[in-house]
Amino acid sequence: GRNAVMMVPVTEQGDLLLVREYCAGTERYELGFPKGLIDPGETAEAAANREMKEEVGVGAHKLTALKEVVLAPSYFSSKMTLFIAQDLYSEQLEGDEPEPLQVVRWPLAQAEELLTHLDFCEARSITALMLTLRYLQ
Image 1 (spheres, rainbow, N blue to C red):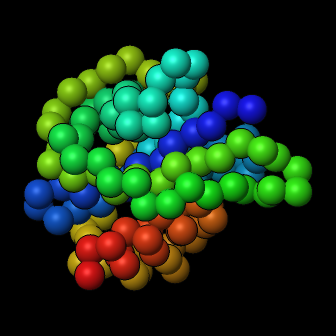
Image 2: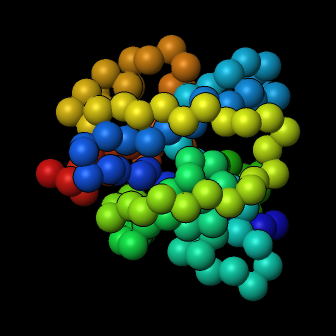
């Protein structure tokens, strides 16, 4: 029943920051945006910054909520808030992942190509990318 967050970090150099991590559901490594659960008593914005620090080693001075989504409303009640994260700064926190995550920089100018990448197939990440592109236009 806990809600979650997903962030699309955009660097000043014009890169998207993604993570490559092992996903038990597909039994392979997937490419997606940093995400995580909101801890009890934590705001979505605080969770977004904490998760980015844990997963990609950055925080954001500017977080803009793009949309709140539900994966399967017929089965689950939890929601995920999608953010674009800008004005990034370096800060690392220890995360709870079972293995280190690989941070992947992807040029924002080539974001459309990300949609056809074989390892980028999570619906929430695709939704977040499309909303980010619309927001930045």
